[in-house]
Image (tube, rainbow, N blue to C red; front, top):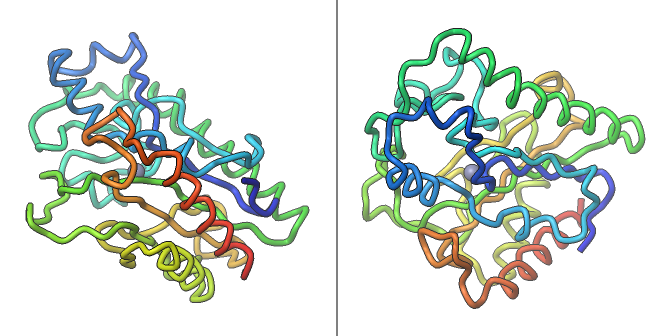
Length: 256
Ligand SMILES: [Zn+2]
């Protein structure tokens, strides 16, 4: 499946790579680190969403979100999750227990320079290129979420979870974009919620609240639709689920 050439896919959370040079920053043992990787990774979201869309239009983090979470603001003062120890550089696990020792300013700077900034620079570059060529861009932020809330989310364990969550930004998600994605996912028979359990959509910083030609939407799929939770083993319906998801994205984009 190839989407329109003005669609940029952002895949921030599907990597499980923890470089050896970073491992020593973590205070948990190997078993706990693996458990945390399992529950926090948006397993296989590249394969689920991307299809045959050209790789130069896909921005994917090469390292786990436990190393650097590229979906967060770089500045903890702007990042709401930083208060729970899950800002751009996680201090805590999903169970809100210690994950990492206190980083020195050099360690922090090194992680941001190596993994965070290049990721965002790549996103900025591709969005600028698409805008120059097509006069419009849609950043599709590709995620999944566990069927049962993790402690850090602050939701009750019995909170209902939809099949699909569509995340929006007040400035960068037009009603047309939001409704197109909601309608397309509902036409697959899925239960869809807006900004619940997760809100927002990632926008390149240079365009944020400035350039409405850059539209953004987050699509989060419930992992119980494609994964043997907590993963990473796939559900037997994985291929069918990927086709349905890509068909829904395609359907949404066609009407925009
Ligand atoms: Zn995610």
